[in-house]
Amino acid sequence: MKIVLLKRKILSLFILMLSFISFDVQSVEFEFKVTVDKQTCKLSVTGTSNNEVDFGSIQASKIKNNLVDPIPIKLLLTDCKTDDFSDTYVKMAAKSTLNTVTFNDDITKSFGIRVSESETAIQSNNDADFIKSGDTVWTNIDKNNLEKKLYTYVKCKTGTACEPEAGEFFSTLTFSYYVD
Image 1 (cartoon, rainbow, N blue to C red):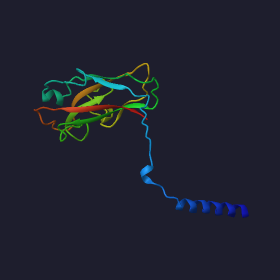
Image 2 (image 1 turned 180 degrees about the vertical axis):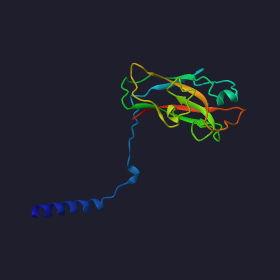
Image 3 (image 1 turned 90 degrees about the vertical axis):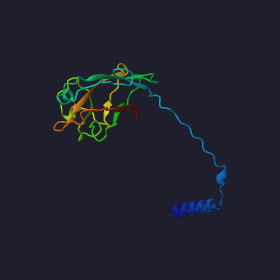
Image 4 (image 1 turned 90 degrees about the horizontal axis):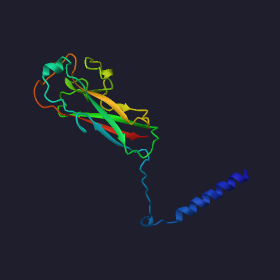
């Protein structure tokens, strides 16, 4: 018992002494070091050209009837700093200039660009067959295969008027490489 009380008194005395010591805030220095993770890679996307998928002019009736062939895109990791891809993945984010219409980032809308891992999803209107904005599109990255193929579709949402039937439409897909 006496030993415990003695330790408390010494600790109290130490804390009391620290309270009388003044520190000059102006003289405090911090050194920050930023380390870039060794697992970084360059991510590139190729469709009809680098970083672009161009469907050209499409008739609205072809979109409504699911007659627009998909265009494959290739995700490629290069210039990697290591061959350790544990805890790495690629995510997709989608955005459109017709946000009131497109359903690539809001599946309740009329039409838009859809992305799938399947080359045969042309007739599908099942949301589970397509990647949604914010989804992870590539996991279990293998150092012997740093390429992933996906397919882009122009689709109408089932039960919608699929409008507007004319005009320009642009959609942006952003693929990001993550290391956790």
